[in-house]
Length: 247
Ligand code: APR
Image (cartoon, rainbow, N blue to C red; front, side, top):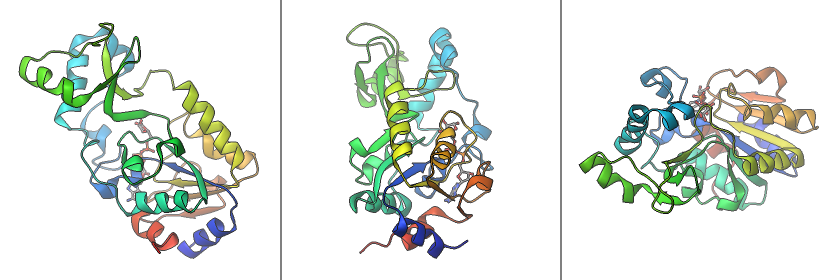
């Protein structure tokens, strides 16, 4: 299968949903999770219940967030993100469902209302009790200087980056939106995911069961390649720049 096959599928589609994973951000310098040298080969995930119950784990989580060790923040969108933003701007893609927490789809110009973040966002924090938003910049100094673990300015509850950790319930509104968008598209385009983490990885199969075509662009084979109408083992940036050229 070739990039021109993918271009044809997109041209023939009435309504595309783009589904992205960490693979679309590696060309921005953000490591993915399961490739050799990926995030989980360097550090173990901190489970939600451990963050809540264990102050040492909470400190480790904040140390990762403020040191940028996971590499999620402070990077720029790459050609792959910009090609996706063009698909949305052209009205061809109605939604970008992303597992990523790096805010790069927003930074590439996709309107926030077109983005469904299944695993939250690492660029800000939220109170686990009342939901109050906290900017990382306001929390960083007191943590780095005095080692103060952030608590909510409004209710005193625990504050955590706005990501969805393992063991944390999935965001209900985002899951409902992702399902509605998945069921409304006739082409579901996966970019850069190993498709091993559920429930997120359930959406490509749902689209296919609902009669949509499924296309997967990923460097490595994925668990769902056998289900797809088109599989492209390719680099996302160059592939998508060719498939959705900047005019
Ligand atoms: N072009 C194409 N594919 C790429 C590129 C690239 N430039 N870079 C990496 N990939 C592919 C890798 O081969 C890999 O199969 O992207 C895939 C990324 O897979 P994962 O690292 O498993 O990331 P992802 O699928 O997004 O993980 C899902 O797991 O740990 C959780 O919450 C985390 O959202 C994440 C979820």
